[in-house]
Image (cartoon, rainbow, N blue to C red; front, side, top):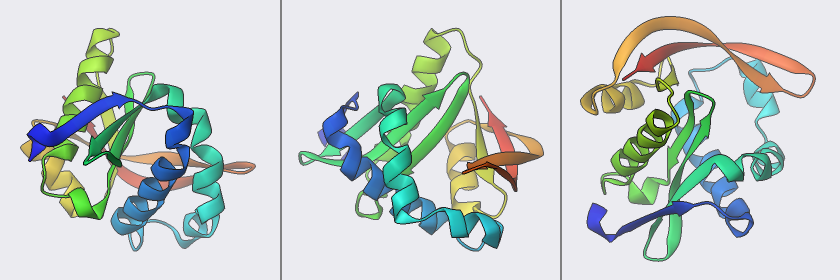
Length: 157
């Protein structure tokens, strides 16, 4: 089904849908694997408020005319990759991952990404896609007024 997917740069008009996909997929992959303290800060409002600032470095995937996933880049990091549950198994995640890596490499970066240690499904996906687990580290998740350390693994191409 990946042939029916359109990848394009995100626009301001995508903000609400990107925030919706982000929150839902983030909760699916993170709840139970992150400090409870971080979960308190990841409200619906937090996703809505943070989305506009990342749109200029985000690529969305559309399936049937609806945004079903996105990838966001920051420096040399593939910072966010989330796909709506309705589009899992369609190849959307693979397309977004490849596009994010392509753009980072084109900018001269060596791509990397962080995966929450307990998110086994995501870790298997990245490994199938050719990313290598470079080991554990503590990722500083931003919150209002600071950060919260989250145990992650760094994946590299």
